[in-house]
Image (cartoon, rainbow, N blue to C red; front, side):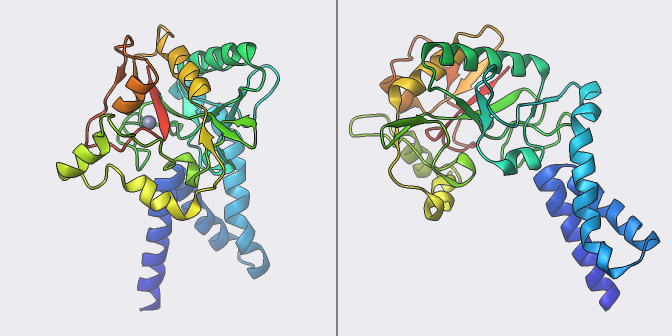
Length: 268
Ligand SMILES: [Zn+2]
């Protein structure tokens, strides 16, 4: 019975770590082998974190031949682009194809040249390896070609693009009276998951933030103008409200996805 629980526990850890970080499950199995070879109670708790850290540091080198590169860990003077939080980078969810990195850098630099306070924040991108390997809960972030970006916000008179929500998702710029209410339409058609993220994020929302519509519109427009960006997903009411009607690349993503009035999705 004890062996059965042990196998179940390790299988669960393998699945959870693989889903969250792609390589974490394999590192967990490696840790079990190391602990088996190197018994000693005081050390065993450090084996997984230590091995994970080594693999995490080596991943950019290992991922390069597979055509994926990491986005920056923090904003710098040269590249004003930062992750929403440490989880995204520690969980290896910040890998993209080199051309998408280049395009994102170009937009970040152009926005900051316009306004030095504009620092772009990215959310989930892709894992480092294997086309088709899903980055849950996203439907399409599985080939290095996809990236989510946070909107810009005003907080106490300061511009920020760190979204005030759990992992950056779920703080929605809701449809107002008279605007097309796509989330309601999707809910009416039975797509219960469409507005799930704001419900999950509700307890973690930070108050005092309002979307800076002009700054966010500038960001969306800058990406829409980049030649190699093929598609952008944004909720229809925001496309209309922000006068972006002339950009055919800005599309509605369908009710089977989740709503996009809390972040911008771009892809090659
Ligand atoms: Zn996305």
